[in-house]
Amino acid sequence: MKEGPDIARVAALLGDPARANMLTALMSGRALTAAELAQEAGVTPQTASSHLAKLEAGQIVVPRKQGRHRYFTLSGPDIVEALEVLMGIANRVGHNRVRTGPKDPELRRARVCYDHLAGDMGVALFDGLAKRKWIESDLNGVALTPAGINFASEFGIDLDGLRKKRRPLCRECLDWSARQSHLAGSFGAALLDRFYDLGWAKRVPESRIVRFSDAGKRQFHDLIGD
Amino acid sequence: MKEGPDIARVAALLGDPARANMLTALMSGRALTAAELAQEAGVTPQTASSHLAKLEAGQIVVPRKQGRHRYFTLSGPDIVEALEVLMGIANRVGHNRVRTGPKDPELRRARVCYDHLAGDMGVALFDGLAKRKWIESDLNGVALTPAGINFASEFGIDLDGLRKKRRPLCRECLDWSARQSHLAGSFGAALLDRFYDLGWAKRVPESRIVRFSDAGKRQFHDLIGD
DNA sequence: TCAATGCTTCGATTAGCATCGAACTATGAA
DNA sequence: TTCATAGTTCGATGCTAATCGAAGCATTGA
Image 1: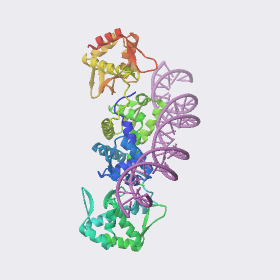
Image 2: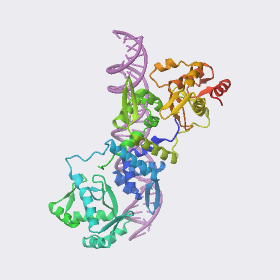
Image 3: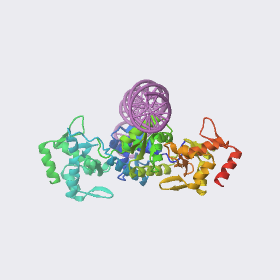
Image 4: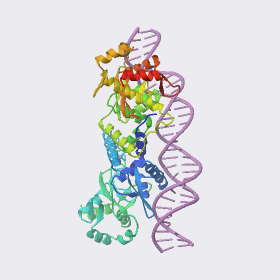
């Protein structure tokens, strides 16, 4: 009966946790693939596909085909604006996501985000690599420096192998618990794998927690220099 | 798992049609009662009560008790901002509400909105009353002028009787089909009643359409002076 | 005190939607 | 061609949330 712009339809599209996660991930302005968005949202690819179809139909996101990937971006700056206003409101009214209970601060310290390290140690890793000038972060994203390439081979990471994959080598991922970036991308994943291989850390089964051994912790801090 | 402001929760609150209708009605900045909001949303009082409880819990609206009424207002300017951005998006992507089909333009011409006249003729009525300086509209709302009070009694409306009701005498109501205001409140309702009584118009059963007779139409236009 | 009005709570129903397993399509690589 | 990867479609399941009727408070007015 009522006429006018249908707020509810748009808001409902942003009102599902999985979709909201995808959209916040896209706020960086970078285009992400369906699989990456599924990871961000914490759902299976099928579910993500269904969500993305809805977002696309609602013109909230725009797909771009490239090879066998589909990259998605937000359909315009107004979407970012909306997300930001909503974040502000959520913040004001104290609607923050269930913080991981005080009983497992481990999760906040070090956890996997997809396949790379997140949490305080993830942020520390990012900062440390930047301080050593192994990575450089600018508006276009993150990239390895020549010194960083050097370090990678010394640390036992096969960069050439990684480059063959279609996945970007370095990618920033916003860590909400720390409100700072940590390192994603295939290089970020390779680093974590290397930590496992070196015995510095291992994953706690059935959880996202990454548990460092005492020795591993020491070596980790040596690595990033603090 | 993810942390940070919970956009989805806020967006979901705005993402229900009934609630969105209530909130847009509140965008005028005026406080409305639960019953009025139920009308705006097109739901029963029980349903509205449930929605309002949710909006209140989510701190989107703020209640204020006055007598046996509960007046609601938006909890802050950020809510208005959010609604406006969402309207912009909805507009851009063409998510407009199902416009009443071309087969019944009558509905767009004259219909009841709760108990007062809406549609093109509702807007014309509002403009006409303002042009004759019978009502005055400013930031605080609409009010009858001394001349308007005069007119009301001549037109057979018992203003004193209306004043006894708790309902505001005059209220602006945004008409989306015309994107302009029409007159609500008990005076607006009384005018429409008078149109019925005078035989100028009658309601089409089972619909919101108000059908004016040819003679009624003439007299209506005489009244508002165009 | 009784009646009327405004609003809420309770309970039952219904509908929609998110989710995932399994199977299918499409693109690229060997 | 064959295999692997990225993504989608289909179908089934289960949960959540909107809705309203009926009954209950609470406030006001007579």
